[in-house]
Image (cartoon, rainbow, N blue to C red; front, side):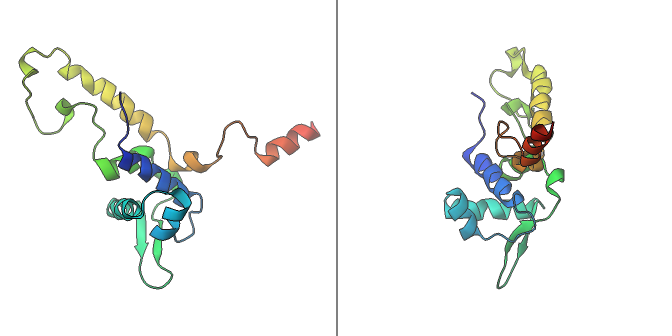
Length: 151
């Protein structure tokens, strides 16, 4: 099974929560209350988001964390890479030439690049803004409902 780490999953949840109100300053305590992500994990992830340049830290009274980039310019791949490092489906895809015991007989090692690239491109093609634009695809936006009633 290919699965995001818990940290990456929590990071997407936290960043989506922040992106829903991108001009606000958010505290770790507020994000913990809103998302139920454990407070130490919230703090750890926020620090990683700041180091990756996705959030900025505002110190002092009324401080907290705010968006550093437009939410349209942040991809899900950016968030995942900020907490877990490069998207990599197998160990043989690292930049470092690591050998495993199966390398001499492995027929698939050089084929994983294409699969890994496809997964990365899929994650990179979804912006944070798309994660928060409409909570549920099956609930129409009010303008859509009003437009249908007029027609």
